[in-house]
Image (cartoon, rainbow, N blue to C red; front, side, top):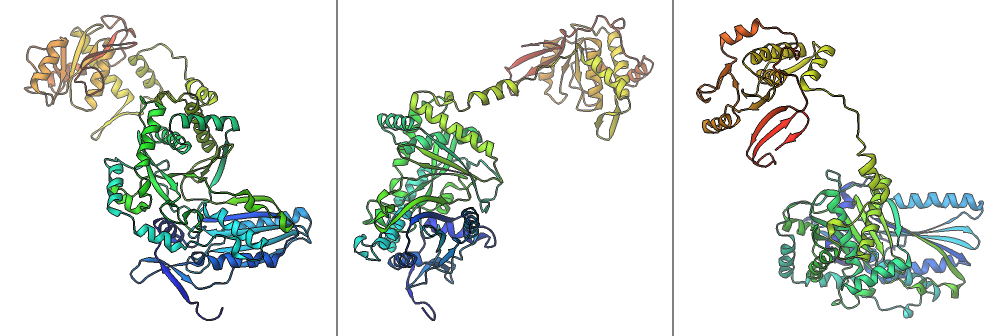
Length: 636
């Protein structure tokens, strides 16, 4: 092909393609995680020229595989389809090296291949590398950008490739191509208004996003790491049968378990997460065999009610999803607008129920055998759960290592397996009683982490404070509004005030009201009261007069310690010690500043004595009424 390529078609983008293009272009200098790499080890005699011709034929048959992605002058993204483009194909011969060295070199080539970005504006967004490891062993590496192919398409693509290789590019053995533009036309013909109503109802009153990694960038180019899990054939069959008995799908069971996990991880009882849907509507002729990008990611909303049974919760989830089956074509940006948020979720589930035909990999007629197959793909989500149904249910959790470590990912997978076990064994179990943690984790939380027992010496607050005075007498103890008091100064002031209180009858089983605003004097007064053995009754001088009168009348304190701001708000029938009174200050100045002993008090200090009395209104979370706090116990 020479000169400027001719344009065969110009097509719009699907909503999912628009999202992928945004992520691909966000930082063109970094790794693009939305590439998929397949590696097939082909054992036997291989005709490289015939395989290349087969690949060229696949590229010619499907115009959308030749797409480049550009913007119109208006800013609208479009996919431009040239009539033809050369197939990116390279052959590398490592057979002269030893087998181990050849394998290492091939592994390096695969890493380099996967980290080499596609330019969305330069088609095609796919390439082949054929590595010769030995005379009878080749590794075929195929990589593409997710913009042009989804997971459902890959088995179809490889079936075409190998069928054409087997038949020397005779296309008669293949089904007629359904143009990708038919899918885009199908999207354009959907009832948008009905879809908006359905999604608006689902997203109504949503109070926020569900994020396991709040604050993390969603354009992360970090290649995820992976934790695998698998159910046995017996466990898989039992789970599938239980779901059928309950009228539920296996997909619902996975989604419900994931919703419960997100609830535990985020503390939310109304969670959302992404689910990848095929986009292959039965209303679209040829959709099942179409090769291209048809999938979409839509939000799944689940309300997690601890008192509901697992079965009821799963039924509600499945019923809600059934209402949206005709509206999976909406893009996330539009759905975000309906929900009134920039983001709905940062986790996603992919249910890979693809039409894999084992016969498509049977190359024995051409003297070849597919000895192994490896697939590498990724996404930008902090957590992505991939589920592959089959005789054994296989799952893996992709996690971004910049946000989660392997131990955390393994623990989350363990939670998932145990929740599926609960669903299989007893779906009538309340959600709140569903067991997620294993015995070792339970022992860690309840026993090892909770093993906080320690020997605490007997003592009272006055004694403990006086011991601290001995250790750090000049250290700052109280700072308020420009005033700083050391431990020694606080202790000496409290000792003098305590002696004054004792002289007026303060002691064990007696109450002293303290009607001081927040201040350094308040700290001194509270300490002075407990030094006498009496209990203090805090009274906010800003309370209404009738509230203060009620407290003092009910508590019957022997006196009230007051100061500035208490004028006119305290009843006159209760004795007062006014710290702003010069006469009181004069009396305090001549009292001893040394610590009180039991001989100085009206009774010995005891940890069982009341320490304070608080009058509550219920806003503290405690019952409305009086709380009497003892030095060793609590009475209500």
